[in-house]
Length: 438
Ligand code: NAD
Image (cartoon, rainbow, N blue to C red; front, side, top):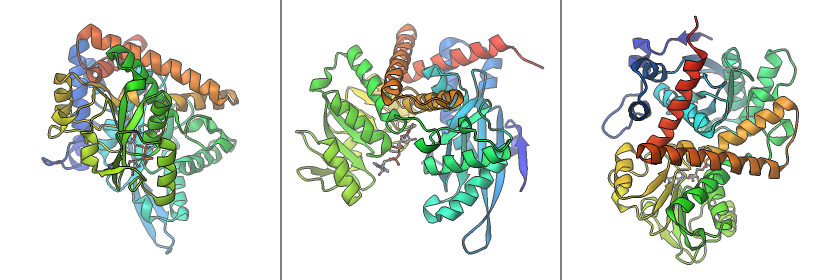
C-alpha cells in the first residue's frame, strides 16, 4: 500500500488526476469554484481568503489492495478530500462509484463546508470515495475493501478531526465496518463518534433515515410562508423515489400538499387527483418501481420536471434541470433534495422566471444535521427520542432557512448565491478569528 499526502495546488494532481471534461460533462469542481467566486464578490472577501477556500486543505489518495473472492488481488483507488476545518472537524460522506474522481470529491468536500456552515453546526467539509462498482462485488469483497480503506485513512480521520458518513452506494453496513476497524486500530475500544449514519445497534440515531426528507419539508414549509403558498392547496412532483424523495413526498403529504407525480430510474407516474405515498411505496417495494401504480398515468423522467405543480423536488441525480428544460419548469418553488440537480445556466433561467430554488446545501442539510445529533449522542453516550431529534431538526432547519432568506434579501441575490455567501462569510470569519499559525 502507498499513501500519498499531496498538496492539492500541486500541478501534477490537477493535471493528471482531474476528470477529463467535454462539452457534455460539467466538471463539478469548476461549478463549485464559480459559486465561490460569485459568493466572494457578493460579500466582498479579499483574494487571499478566496484562495484559501478555493482548494481543499488536504487530499489523501490511497491504494486499496483487496483480496477478491477468486483469490486474486485487485487494487482499488480511494480518496479523502478535507476542504476546510476552521469551524470544526471535517464532515462528509464516502461514496463508492466507478466514476468517482478527484474533482468530484474536491467539489463535494467544498459543498460540505458550505452546508455545515449554513446549517450552523460546528463542522467543516470533507468527502471521500473509492473507484469501484459495488453492485458487482460480494459482501465479503466490500467488507475487505472497506476495512482496508478505513485502515488507509485512519490517521487522518477521528472523532475530533474528520467524521465520515454514508453517501452514494454506502450505508450502515460500511459505516459499521469503518467504525470497527478504526476502533480496533486506535486503542481497541469502541469509538462510535468517529463516523455517523451507523445502524441503531451501534449508536446510530433515531430519525436519521428520514432526516433529509424531513429537513427538506421544513424548508419548503418556510419558503411557502414567504411566497404565500398554501401547502394545503399545493401540488408536488418528486423526481427520484429513494430515501430522500420518498420521505420528502411523505412529509409534504402530511403537511397537506397533494403529490401529483413521482418517478424512479424506471420512469414516472402522475395522477392529478393525488398519489398516496404509502401505497406508492408499497407498490415499489413489491414490484421494484413506482411504474404501473394502479390509477396512475405513465410519464418520463424528463416530463416529471415539467409537470404542472406548485413544488418540484428533484431527488435523484445531478444536472437534471438544465438550460434546455429550465424554461419549461412550471413550479413556483424548486426544493433540491439531490446534490447539484440544477446547472448554473438553469439557475439563472429559474431566477429570471421568479421561481424560488431552495438550494441543495440548504434543502438537504437535514441529513448532516441529524448526523451531528448522532455524533453528540455518541460523545455523551446518550440516546435521544425520535421526537427530540425531529424537533431539534425543525429548529435548525427553520433557522437556516431564515438566515439564507435574510441574506438573499440583504444582497438581492438568488437563494443559492445567498446560501454560499452566508457560508463563505461564516467560514472566513472563523479563519480570521483563529488567525494563521505558524
Ligand atoms: P437513493 O438511492 O435512495 O434514491 C435515488 C432514487 O433516484 C431511486 O429511487 C432511483 O431509482 C432514482 N433514480 C435514479 N436515476 C433516476 C433518474 N434518471 N430519474 C429519476 N429517478 C432516478 O438515494 P438518496 O439517498 O435518496 O439520494 C438521492 C439524492 O439526494 C442524491 O443526489 C444524494 O446525494 C442526495 N442526498 C441524499 C441524502 C440522504 O440522506 N439520503 C442527503 C443529502 C443529499
